[in-house]
Length: 346
Length: 179
Image (tube, rainbow over all chains, first blue to last red; front, side, top):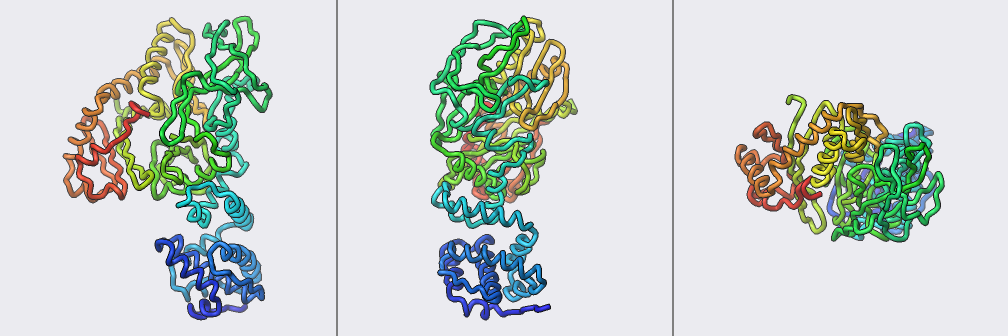
């Protein structure tokens, strides 16, 4: 087994690009754990790349160097698999507890997770909608990328649905027999609103409990199992200064008449008398999810535990409060991989 | 009333330009009814409306009433009410409607006591005076119990050095009075 021990200088000197990248970072950003660790990772990886006869030189700035770093990770994995290298030898030379923690963190990730992070990084690098002051900081953070991957991925959430459906379409509440849509949850985006105009629901019939069925006006959007008309109640639109809008939402649901016939009719969104908040108009799905992930990323430093599994943090421009239900009821900080229940703006 | 706990929490969030947004929340916890504390997510005026409408069901004026929050959604009939957490797709249980009406009444009674915001601020200020200045300054989290109400103060790093009067005067949101 080959064990390589290198001195700090030996790693820096042969690689001016890496040194420049390191100096650039130290000169440009506050010395936080986040940025202190990245140059170490970069240097270690580049050294490994060199030793594996793949000397792709960094250009000196962080972004291209990060690409090299990612490629280096793959090479590092191969090397580790062969048992040729011990990361701890390199880390001891740097003498940095932060670097040690970061590399331990990386080692704990499975290969698919690492690949997922790389893909997530590539996507946000192409379209990063976060505030200018925060976007690069987030994009370079393995923690943010991990949360963003969790926020956008199409795997079951607490209730078994995709966060995207919950926010951009709304979750349909079903009756116990699951043969009728009886309400709407979520719907925190303008994309969830299908009706072009606001509506004033009117009733010409009652349900079996004697309550009015708001069967007018007829919806304009088509009714399918995957898509239901959703409308804003006329006059309920209350904009906040930060771009968030509070509205009352209706879904076209199914009701039972006293004679047992199923008919369509508008039904207020479930809970809170139909009132909900929408992320700012014009925010795309990608932007909304990036901002939710940003807020979740910031929970440890600027988040509040509200109650149960409800947490509150802020958007990247600091203007919008974002509430999130995450994982089980707990007041301890939620782990990156815990599923969402919902996320909505204030 | 050992199942009931009342809490006033004050917490701070750093918004844009390092501006602090400090919020007061008035929680009502009833340990027998899961998730009922999520009613804080409903506006005060709606909580008042829910009590009126639920009373109509109990009195037989209405047959059925749906109310609550997306984490505590209730379908009420005259005698029994079914509680759900639709976000987590959990059945929270079936309870006598009269118990849920009592829950609403008690929560409203707690809220009415402090609906005068200035009175609420004075109450928190007086509570903070019960701890030493050193404890107030040095701790990011303080809990004070007054009249069986737990007052939780969660301070942000940006609150460091802020005098009690300033801390209280800079509260911007009062939930559920102003959601």
